[in-house]
Amino acid sequence: MVSGHAIGDSKIFAKKVPRNPRFENVESRLNTGCSMTRYMKKIEDAQSNFKVKPNETFKRITLRHLAELTIQVAEQELISDRLCDSVISDNEKQVDYLQPPKRSYTTLSDVISGTGAKNLNDAEIIKTDDTSKYINSPLLLLDCQTEDMFNKCHIRSAVHLDTSILSRTMNPYTQEMRDFMDRPDKIIVVYDENEETSYKVATFLSERNISNVFLLSGGLKLIAKRGLHELVTGPYPKVCFREEFLKKEQNKFYKFAIPGHKFQVDNSRSKFTSDEILKLKSQLNLYTESIAPSTSRSTTTLKSSNSKTKVRSWR
Image (cartoon, one colour):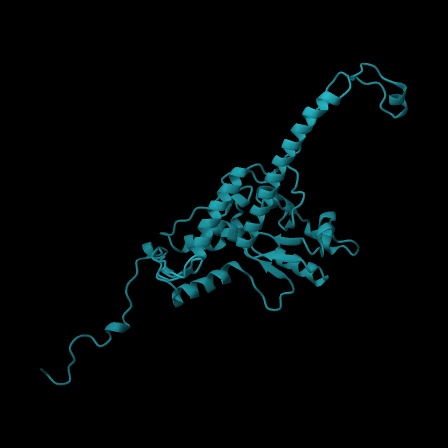
């Protein structure tokens, strides 16, 4: 052994492992539990999706809570519609027996009341409006996009807000806003593509002492990333994917396609169908499982009502 010479390279740990750009965006599916890497990734995700500023005067609502509230409102409306249909059908059966025979002539009272001459043999056609809003909804969604963007893609139960009315000196609110403002059982949620316009609207309303104003964190951009596509009516605007398009220009191996609907799905309809609610529930379960912090192995203690036996359950 020659003195003064070490065996091997003394700077072996300082060398960086070469990385293939083809697999730069490939992530591991193995859940190793809580770690600093996962924590920093969550912080970066919040910084890229949310534009949180100090001293915000309004409150925020997460996408998960908004989706859960929307599902509850839609399910309650479906149940009430079915009950109303059953009651109406029963009443129609009873009215058929009590209804007097139809007359084929016009009386003097018809002329005096303004009805005039009419064909009384024609049956009246009752039209139902399937695009009506939720009647007893505690939620008012205000879409702050431009009208063209709103017609292309918005949350199904949302109402378009022309932000130019907020510059009025007198009465800068719509009738729907006045019905929800400062109500203890109602909330107003504003959103847009990526919190640019909606942030100003939420600040404007909260500074005028409207206490129940909330901002949807992330807007349509976060809905697209989390995969809750049944919430919206059509293809997402391209402004929601600026970062992805930039990565695609910088890295030729990076593949990206705009998720969600390729075409509009009943843009004028405001209510969710039962199939859309079921799909939204499955999408919400996938979304909560993907972001919920969990450990690969944990123990819980369950106490039975009949015995004090301790049961260990492993995830």
